[in-house]
Length: 339
Image (cartoon, one colour):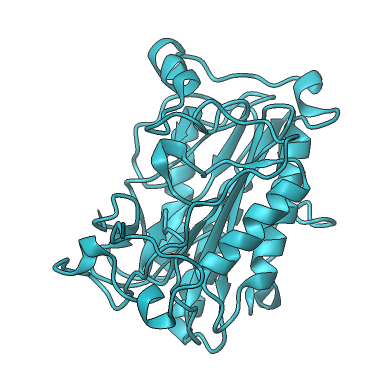
């Protein structure tokens, strides 16, 4: 029977683009509206290693829950975990390839569901599990966050419009049991000046934070630098969602807030692996969550952009594990995000 949220791929366009049941009396903050979802995609490659939450009915990661209850330290990764077949560096390289595939599919008239299909199949081709799938019951293989969506947007049958900004957030889980996490925001068609400003500001916020990464830097200090860059461009920094440690667990210590005067604990050491992923808003930093219990949006309905890398703290700085080939340091190039 219809569940009010999904419909088959063969359904009519009218059915696919209808509102999900939760949205009929929902008060939206901006112009964006959800559509229905395609059926959940399945793991079709028997070589893919499943994370512990993949088959849990509530998508709970028992290993993360145990870690949260008992672990007070930030893991240090050594060469044996970083190198070799299917290890952490490999997981991050695969994440980069998968994001590039998803980014190529992003253009006017394409649904975010089609981006999800491309990402899912790219993961299968690389013997990787798409980490978002069933993580606390997230229904898709990638997060696609359009316009006023800050993060955790669910791919659906809505077609991308001329002028949209679209964030694609990919995490891949390798056969070696490691996650690699990254995202980029794309400008689709003719994006206005404010849209381009928030996208470039988000890029520069991450760029400025990465320049601070080295042993001895306090995790809490990243937020002040990000805040200064955002404020100089008349933007704000989201406070609810943070960067995080990553590796054999999707989310672990440290917690990496992006805002000014945060109280994050910890000092960077060589071998720490983490994501930095500032979410930058054109308007106020306040957020709220749609009735799907996932999609985080700006409370004022103004647009939001984000870039993310997984990084390794090295003896004198950092290595971007999810970098583009031949781009060891982030360099702004508007052509790379234009679709």
